[in-house]
Image 1 (cartoon, helix red, strand yellow):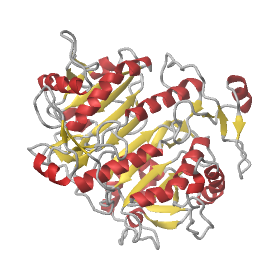
Image 2 (cartoon, helix red, strand yellow; image 1 turned 90 degrees about the vertical axis):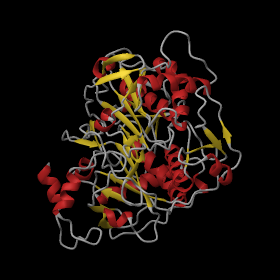
Image 3 (cartoon, helix red, strand yellow; image 1 turned 30 degrees about the vertical axis):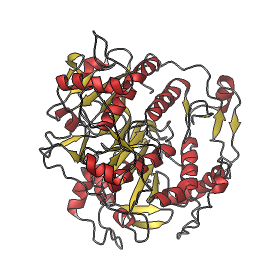
Length: 534
């Protein structure tokens, strides 16, 4: 594999990447890439439906938006991928208006990508409201017309997906090789990772959520505002801790400071201001003071290490906690106690904890303050939800790890280089891992400290994972509970007719019968005893 990657990124005749030949230092950068906030993307040659170019050249392409979304798909002519690309094609102008350009990746050749794009275009035209969007202009490259409106990389040998940690070990081709997962990176103008969504092949991404995250990032960049948990565009936002109340009163409308049991005035809401400007280059921190080396590689199928947990519900080893019922686990991190976005998120998690348990998932949080601080902070968390702590029992419905040294957050790649404490040490980002009973990572959401997570999206992913595991069903792009679902490629049409209702096979230009919809099973599907999804 190493030899193959070195060959893939070796200088080639006529290949210029970012104005210079690929160098030995670039090889090392590519080989050492790990998914985390602030990670610099390596350069590599892109063979695409819109011609060949270096990745860095694409990121800095003149006349195009400064921000970039790189997103991967398992393979061409597969059902969930087709729905996702159709949505992206329909939304390409929306992303460009928001200041973001798109580039996809799949493991077929360019000729197959171009043929597949005809199916994608057919599905795009069937989407609700698609008439409101102009047809993609299509950059006609040397191999023919592109119907998607953005380039699609041909990663035939899977070398780029391997380098960037995009593979899904649960999805394999006929030769037994792992296929790309549904990885998505939001890349800033400085070529660094600003947010990541990493889902298995069976879970289609929610592009409404991705546009929401983009809006949140630009609000932080332009106004030093943060978005609370479950925030929706144009809803009220939170003033970042670094902005004084006097400055907030001068700059924003309808300032409200929440009265909390701690007496600390840190939760300050204002009206959402005008549309942010995406072309401003936000500053990115560097991690000179990271307290521990990241030894966990964020990717689908990665096994979680064991470590000691000091928590609000006692001390235990992480693997022992994972073995408790229910079998699935969500581990999620927060930057710091008594901070505004964290307080909104913890309250949402507390109120949803029982629902998560009904879904077969337990929760455990992590923040970098002491157990005593966590317990005191819980009073504010509960008060914001209109609740009061019981006289006995734990303060929250789930344990909260006290990672005062940041050692756990650093090991797991959870740190945000743009969010630091008074001593200059990075604070945890908003990382969230879906952990299976075999202690492996099944999905990841990694947002910066200023972007509150959407827990409706978390529930959506849980339900998608369960449908894939126990019913062999996939969820298309932008799927929500109650929508129709997709029959997985491994299931025959005869089996699908026997097991599900209202089977519909879409008629596509390729004449391949791979896009098959059925009604979503009405009854909740229980996690299988093994819970591995293999």
